[in-house]
Image 1: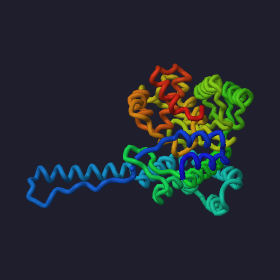
Image 2 (image 1 turned 45 degrees about the vertical axis):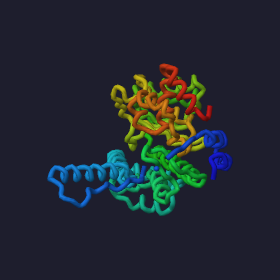
Image 3 (image 1 turned 90 degrees about the vertical axis):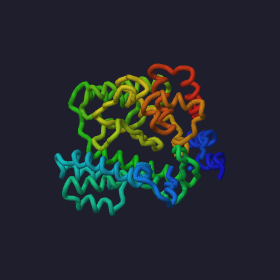
Length: 354
């Protein structure tokens, strides 16, 4: 099915996002396909040649493992599980009860039954992480089924209306789960300055649920990020949460009218990693993710060769991530420092929603 036809059908989910996005997303050539290493011909070879061949084969296996979605998913689960255990250890019984109250509305009865039986932070953490991984597991299933295929340069070579719908619905489900989990584990702030900022976010920017973990420095940066995004006409997410479960600096989980911005309380960004030096960069970056096309295809949109140096030089994060992250790094820099002519051109090329 052509991208234009897919866009029309996806409009029932969010016309503003899907209709224009698919018209402009270009995808190209084949990430998860690896050629078998060519073995040396059957002939006498010296020990040096044999060692080099063994090293080459070992390197190929290492690359294959690194890009294997199964290994990446396992790595992600372990990281989240360790954080979840730490977050649940203190006041375990109270937190478990709160989780049961909030999650009954968004989880299957079988999940609730497992939570009720969990008698240690380790057991409960495993259940919560499993639920949080639904979106990623859905992605993996699409890849293994062949619904999503990638090129060696990690650009998407195959997509479909059905795949985008499945991923979209999984993401909406995840947003509901994460929001319920964070509501259950929310601890009201006590610092008057933080409380004032949380109230300002609600009254001035329409944030419905905010949890800043009593961190005044972080709260000020969140407010500055919202002020900066608002000046550019960006609608602020309804939920802004400092999460004990998060492993990156932040994350934006998109869902119509229920988008969730998660922030890591420990913000450590090395020089050159981001496109600006602003202390509020990570928070602004996550808020601006709400302005991108929420399509798997956009994440892998091919960037023309002429713009590759711009992507690579913008920031370390941009250089190592997909097209959607390059777009948001450009958008963040645009709001904070402004863009140079070449960056402006790439931003306009990727700004398919206007």
